Length: 277
Image (spheres, rainbow, N blue to C red):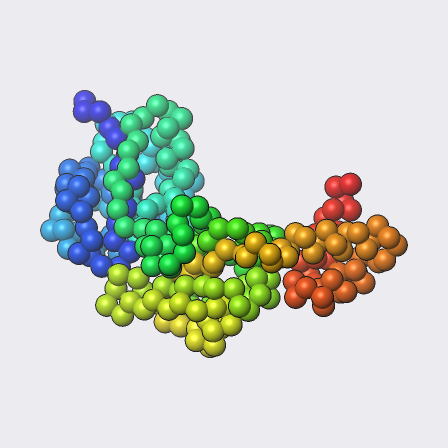
């Protein structure tokens, strides 16, 4: 029986001309393809002129299908794992399958290729020796505020994915935490026919994209300036006010007015700190 293997395959993020010779060969030689979206996988396979059985592996069935995928590899199959676009696991399903395969000592390798993360960073004009990747922001709650605060105080560029129907709220919250003049580069429909790359600040991005945008967006928010007071520093100031006898609510309100940092972010951080002290 041939040795099985899992191939984690990066696929084009929009332009099918970005298919590499190695990706083509890997798909041609695969016994099975597990795909986040079988319809998109079918389009890719037709472009390649390849017929391979395709099974779905998406967020809703990831745990069950990951086990089946690993069993297929263990039985000697060559399995290609692909997502909608770019590299599986990077804000896409696939981590469970890779981890289970590694835990069982099976062969796992990667077919590198297109990435919206590195494409956007390359187009951003920001220094790329250090950056962070946030993926999609949480929709609501204190985890969203925590991550927004981290972006606000980041000393390196931050790459985010943004969906068209959430771009207005995401930009408004980023401007609130980072300040409206924080530089940002927005890539829309990267590598596709209607690709657009826009550079400016968060205030300008709100005016351009806030009312709505067509297609997926990848944003790179510039780093905070060395002399900017970060959200964490303002939170520490609020903690000092509370330690001096001011109520949590009043401290959050006062510091928010002085800093422009979200009152909700400051208030939640103060409450969390009281709970762990």
